[in-house]
Length: 69
Image (cartoon, rainbow, N blue to C red; front, side, top):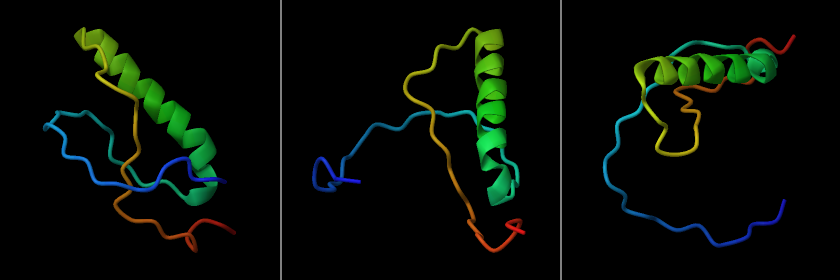
């Protein structure tokens, strides 16, 4: 994969975000992420909230050894 630009730091204004905190084995990421994003977007729509940007994943811990067998 080619890097289009060099990494840089950007200062951005504080934003609120909504998320679902869960634990998912690495082998289940492909199924879990679309499902969880669907839940987030459904909740936002129900509340009448329009997303201010693209979704993102926040990983608190990544343990590749767990759940790969």
